[in-house]
Length: 114
Image 1 (tube, helix red, strand yellow):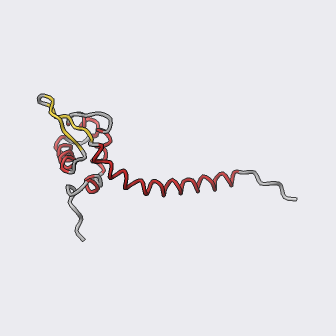
Image 2 (cartoon, rainbow, N blue to C red):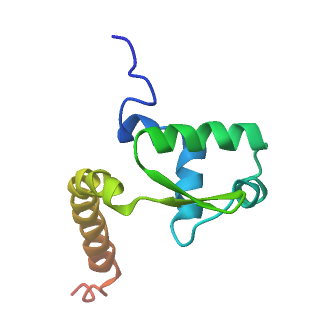
Image 3 (cartoon, rainbow, N blue to C red):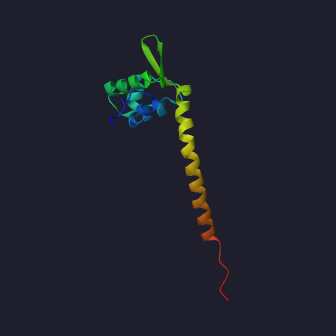
């Protein structure tokens, strides 16, 4: 089965680790491409390419401020990703709780043998 194009939906777009880095960097404030380049450590053409993919799937918005373009995450478009991962978050939380319970049970002092 052929792999879906990275521009087909948000899930395929965020499969690329550098795009996730960009989304995390933009999560708190809007930034210019140059700031993203410096923070992420990629060259400008690569950052622009990744931003283009993120824009096409609506995960990033751009605003013009004079000659500058400012990018920011589109939280509403990220919500479906979050909702999907919540299923697995609940699973892992359950697993972590089981590990915690086992560790605590092993740390409980055992009564001395008679």
